Length: 296
Image 1 (spheres, rainbow, N blue to C red):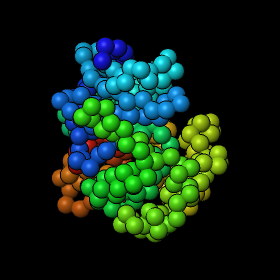
Image 2 (cartoon, rainbow, N blue to C red; image 1 turned 135 degrees about the horizontal axis):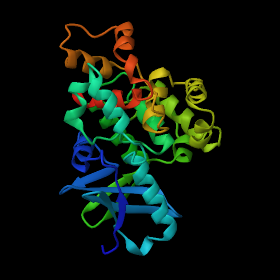
Image 3 (cartoon, helix red, strand yellow; image 1 turned 180 degrees about the vertical axis):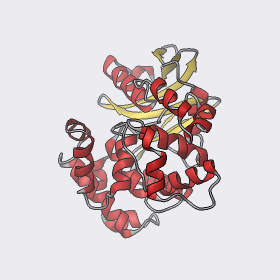
Image 4 (tube, rainbow, N blue to C red; image 1 turned 180 degrees about the horizontal axis):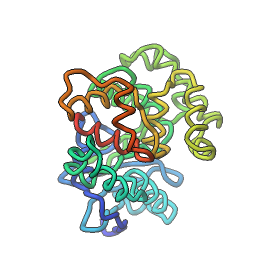
């Protein structure tokens, strides 16, 4: 691999910290980490792009795994995806300033300096991940996601590295509930996944449309979809649509993280969380993401 694309990164960025976050589950199959490098495949151009991500001071280094399939169009898509994935266009200095004065965050954020809200740029993937993860432990959610991807997605291999492409909405839209329930998920979740796939495949739901009207409009549209409640909607708002004020205030992991950081005997009430988060305005998504990292 001779071609290298150098993507500038903000000062508040640490590749190792983000790689550590991405390493949290052995069941992850949508990317691989080998020897401190990250390998990923995404749909791009008329096919798929398989690429490697590394870092040097001030830059992410992106290299194609298959230069023959590389083009200017593919390069633009890969760079855009990588910037979005690592949230590189977001200036975190105001968040760090806020956190330095916040009684809850000031003991958490410095330990994770340089961590970005690692995104899920694809709307269908983000929605599926949110639905799959509803009311189950994170480890089992990863297991179910791997089964879903490896059953209905597509595998790419370059040398000794393989990655999976997330299933296409049109393929999931054509499934029966039993096809997904066979993976040991609930029939209800299978229905929700198929329903979301059909909305996207039919052009009734899309990322750009959700971004047009602002966060409240996007949240209202998402919760109108069967199987998507406030938690899933806000998960998608923060991880895919990048609304900084997205706030899954009812999240159990957030409650447990606050309890752990403050040494509380019981999980905080919703009223207490609202008090604690009063100073996070405009940065609720990042505050949540950093607190999640305390536990996961």
